[in-house]
Image (tube, rainbow, N blue to C red; front, side, top):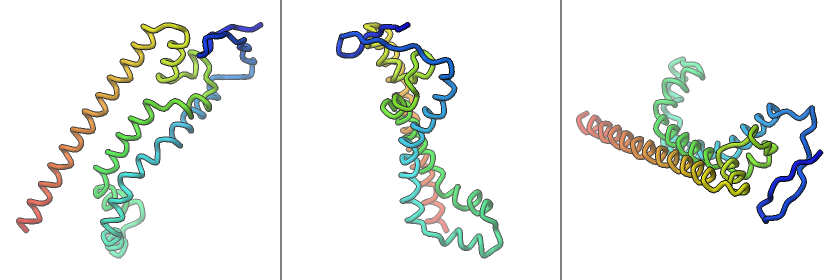
Length: 172
């Protein structure tokens, strides 16, 4: 038995029923893997230049004083890169919300089971459900605005922390 779904070109094509052994749970690792591979470089893009600029001096001093690897990371490295890391995570979140290509291929694109919001917008639009498609797209737009507001607030916090650090250094 076949189901017929409209394709984006306006014609119709048969779509075979899923085999019994095909499971939506198998698509979840594909969705996660695709999102990670596309978005994690955005996290690394922010703290790596900062760490390069700061150099290894503080970490080496902590190791010389007897701190272990995890302790050095938690007490020395992470406080130095926390704002850059948060900024990278915010960029990663923005990219992950709009990821379409990799998730579409790796998820199996099983309707109503392995769809992300961008895939759902496309499916609704292809089904001529314009109200649903634009509603979902509006939700994506709202999430993008929330992400921009969070980024702006994070930048203000970073600037305030930088000013406070500059004042402490000038006073010392």
